[in-house]
Length: 179
Image 1 (cartoon, rainbow, N blue to C red):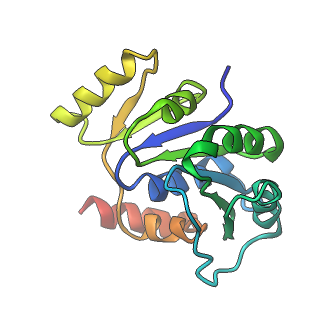
Image 2 (cartoon, rainbow, N blue to C red):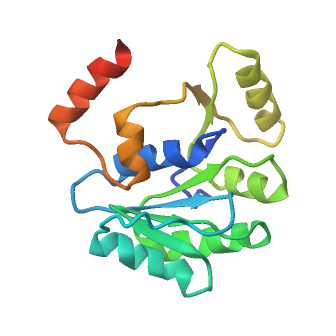
């Protein structure tokens, strides 16, 4: 059974998960949740948050978990030993896309989240040895993933703040990033 829409594994997983969460959320008014395994507090950065993102951030905050709403995203960083339970409760109550960002070494908590994700993406050069090793190790626990290059540029910077660029800006950004 899939509890989470997507799991993103890699060094910059939280930023890339934010980009994916915004894409999954789709329409302008929709929000999403990014649950990170980094633990600890989440900086608000003084950024405006939509009412929907603030509502989503209050769900795990009610359980004493540090959260932050930025733009259209609720960022959640539970402590490692509470990662699975907080992630499951948040996903069950969210009514919005939930993306898991895993940037710490794999352990039993990460394996549970990966097994309960609809899709898994490894942030690595798809043709490189890291990608082959990661995909082989995930396959041993029954998780089948795909590899993607780590995105960069304005789209990722905006996603960290919980926002996505307009379609016109996205087309200019895509051309710029491809250069």
